[in-house]
Length: 291
Length: 221
Image (cartoon, rainbow over all chains, first blue to last red; front, top):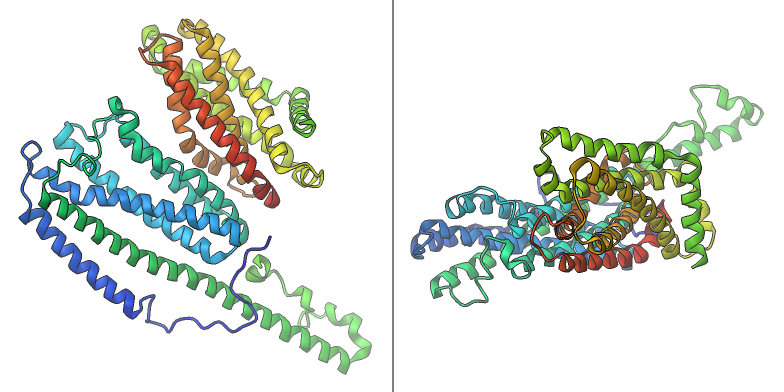
């Protein structure tokens, strides 16, 4: 059940120094994200009306809710990629999984931070222990902190991909729990029910919120593309290092064989000479060992 | 089922002979209960009202130690390899390991329940609910713990990574078990049986995931 890595027999071409992980499409997407954020800010802070009860604080909804959805999306992508890791045994999907988890964690952190800031003027508290949505969101955040921490301590890429896929699949159970918590435990939360489904949002507010979803989706896609490319380059860099180590080992073996052919009588003393170490005496090679 | 019982019996026999759980983990549980009493200034009414939470937090600490012990008896002499070569299906090995952990946790919980009655003066208003909730929560903890325990095998940082991975996914179990005990010990007016149903759902979910995933994880252990 070996997980497919980049081929080691073909020369790997890394990106040119200074070219980064961008492409024409991703740069255009990046520009679209910047424009989208600017337009969203205009709608959120200038064009939409303040709420009758919450006043200007309600504008937090345009960041808080899209952040939450982007966070869930990241974890769901991680779960889907994890299924593919276990099914297809491909490292490609493992890179997608870690990219989804990192970006999901970032947006979930943003959701928690904006929620805390929103809670203070609205509920008169930074943190409410009895709020089931807050608590489940924090637990979701911690599950994926553990997932990423775990990935850092497993040295083998294959084992890491398989094991962390299982952790991701257990962790994603929390996503529907967080999302549905305000409906399931309506009496144990200060959060309101879903604003989208109850139809109470005004047209411009709803439009701005929808725009927030689109802008955050673009930012999410832009980050996913770049994080994936970084992950792929890491795999390629490992492959290049492995190829270099293998070429070095091969050259050393050929030199030893030539030496043995040229001096057939002194083969037994070769290992005694510290300047003529054999192929097995070259010391541990980190990349070769990892492979 | 023979393989399940064989694995469970093996683990329990090792524990019976080594007495690690009885001589180290159980005293640790009692020490934590006493320390909670000291930290809360020995206020009996406070201790009594917080008994469900204190009890289940202690159980989680104890579970970490028990699971680490369950894994270490396999890694100490490369016994995971022997388990793999035994030909038993992964889910059967998982079920056996989880069963042994659950049995040890239940034994410790029984002593701890006695402890909270003596130390915190708690009383069981609904013993059936308390026992049912303890059973369901213990199965959830043992199944999730047995899966995550073997995930941490082969790493130098097993002792620190296991709680970090396991405790967040057991947080819903902690909440549900505490609420069920709130009803069973009459420390809060909640519907304990509803929380007990949630515990059963988590126990079933973790058992299914563990049973399916264990073979994959065992391959690398």
